[in-house]
Image 1 (cartoon, rainbow, N blue to C red):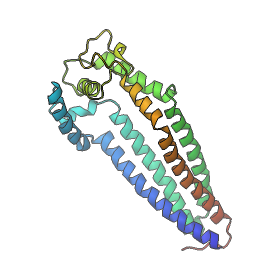
Image 2 (image 1 turned 135 degrees about the vertical axis):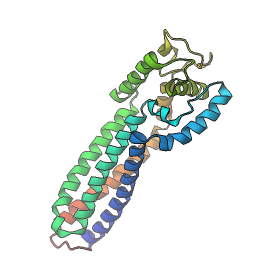
Image 3 (image 1 turned 180 degrees about the horizontal axis):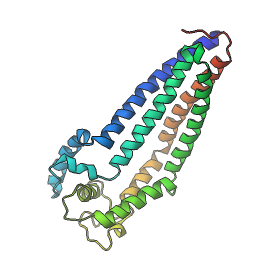
Image 4 (image 1 turned 120 degrees about the vertical axis):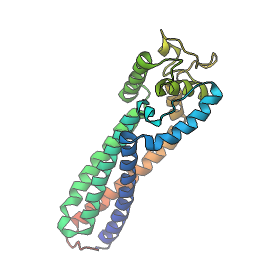
Amino acid sequence: MACATIGKCILILLNVVFLIISLGLVAIGAILAFIPGTVLKYMLDAATKAASTAGYTMPKDVNDLKDLPMVYEVGVALFILGLVLFAISFMGCCGSCSSCCKCLLLGFALVMICLMIAELVVVTMFYVPSSPIHSTIRTTLKDKIKTDYNENGTDPFSQSINLVNHYFECCGIDGESDFIPKSHRSCDSTNKNGCYTKLTNLIQDNIIWAGLALGGVLALQLIEVIFAVVIFKDNKISPI
């Protein structure tokens, strides 16, 4: 009984934390997907100052930034992730607080186990440079360079590519070949490595810290599963 009581307190506390996080993800996702100008205005101001020193011109209207690559997709992904996390956390809170909702704990535990497996799969694929996730992102951006990039263009996509190449000392997605047959002036003659290659290398260099972070999240989720099962099996469960 004492173990179940302690478990309820811990389970409620952890799920309240995850509820707050989920609401934050929903808010950020909604802003990026549906009203990106709210946040991207500050990005435009900073990019305009940086562009002026590099000889580039950024769009003057923040609404043009809706065409930046992956902004909408990232926003939708965060919005859906936040909704899923909110539903799971709410299920855990209800199941912990009320004996009449005890069956929710079993569903919570099963869903949490599935979520942990999904996290392991997705994160593992993200850390493998040749995974389908990276291949899809690479292909999408490379195709957009071939169709939409203009070295002298003032559209947000062309200027974002120019600025990334200039300030991160890289070239395109996988290298100079991404721009063929188009010309470009943003790749320094001594920096021909792809920007996405630099990103994956950075991930690999910090894989230990990323692994520790993932391990911490999984450990918290495992604790939730264990306490959910303990409370579910306790026949004398009572509301706090």
